[in-house]
Length: 172
Image (cartoon, rainbow, N blue to C red; front, side, top):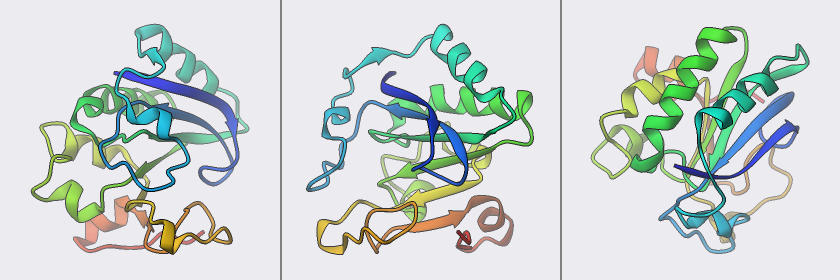
């Protein structure tokens, strides 16, 4: 897996000060995507054990609320093995920090019959607290929205959604 950037004090992609990992690779190609460079799976730098340690170290300060995964597309099958392993380590080392993920796939696509659903998906999804789902749609763009770019996107409470077996929205 490659990644485009690590932001160690991000306040735009989830509640609080966060560490954000922008993974490479996305096949959605949304019109006017804010991060088109990350569509290429080879973009950026190779994700290594050192990269993982850098992220874990960046999460250590008490003022860091959690980790955000975005891209690119975290739920492309090529990225899920690495992100699942990272999320498990974050859960183990920082049980009080939350994990947000942005995906162009809807929750239904992630859990259903789509290219997003692979051998790592169930475990990856179970590590998340919040999922911002749905493709960016230029015609639905609204800059007044918190933590999402277009009105069609949802901010989902993943733990409650999995527990209740129905979509539960996260209050921001």
